Length: 249
Image 1 (cartoon, rainbow, N blue to C red):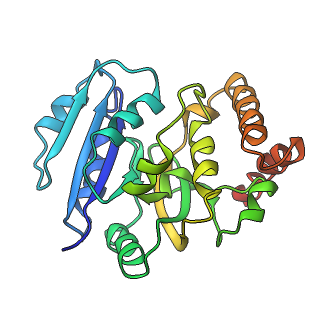
Image 2 (tube, rainbow, N blue to C red):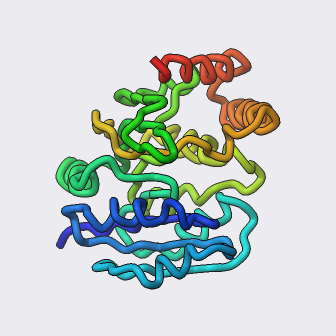
């Protein structure tokens, strides 16, 4: 039997983008999917769009106030019953119809615990206009001290990895995905595979990039995480931020 993928979609007043997000999931050529949509009590018509959507895959909806994006993602993790868990945020679009089948092939046939790939940041309205390319590479643990990290929206993991390492730490409001990925990637018993292709397209305007205040807050959280997980020092933080520059060229 094929592995089931649990896809977690976090929404909040996402009426402008939720259709394209869901379309990119429904158009996958891999059908063993469940969708867990975690909504933070949207005040627009996001839920009306979702509930009336002409869908071939059932959508499990949880709509309640939360304590931020990572709280919402944790709810999605806890409610997932699939063998593999991935995230497609409401502003994101899967890059092609074969993404899930390619990921499952790597996990099931080659026995990887996690798969990640490349991410494109695109214009909010013109999603074919690429603003930034986050190109990843094959993993080795020495990269962590150089500030390297795969793009979290492209990171698909076996549910067993979450069972072992837990979920997102809510003490971090912007960088909890960084903390989680370091914890997982530091586990030498796990095998990870780089899929050299664009997995997801993210509309520009993520929560950690919207203001100088958030940029500084993210850097502070990143540094705390680097020290806590013993993967480097202040130079690691500097290199992590410098790596972003090449993504614009």
